[in-house]
Every structure is written in structure tokens, then in C-alpha cells.
Length: 61
Image (cartoon, rainbow, N blue to C red; front, side, top):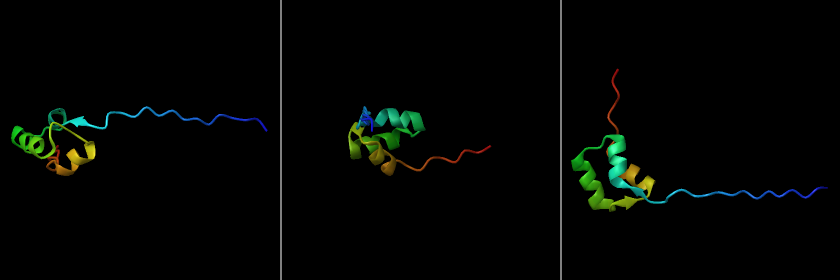
């Protein structure tokens, strides 16, 4: 039986995300952005940002 190398290389992305950039991307207002920065700091894991961000506005047609 032939020996096969089953090595998988994974390059992890950044663990910390910029809170201000996330707020701009998802349309979160400056007041909410200030609250998130006070709570989490300027950089935080994505799951923490999403858990503490306000729910997204519904998209009307």
C-alpha cells in the first residue's frame, strides 16, 4: 500500500476584528458603535461583536 501524506495546511485568519469597520460594513450608527467600543474595545472577536450588536434592520422592497 502506498503511503499518502494527508497533511492539511490551514492558515488562520485574524482572530480580532476592528469594531469600527464592522459597524461601517453593517450600517450600525455612531451611537451604537460608541457603545460597542466601550463594551468590547477597538478590537474584538467576531462572535462577541455579533452577539452585542443591535439586530439588523429589515430590508423592505
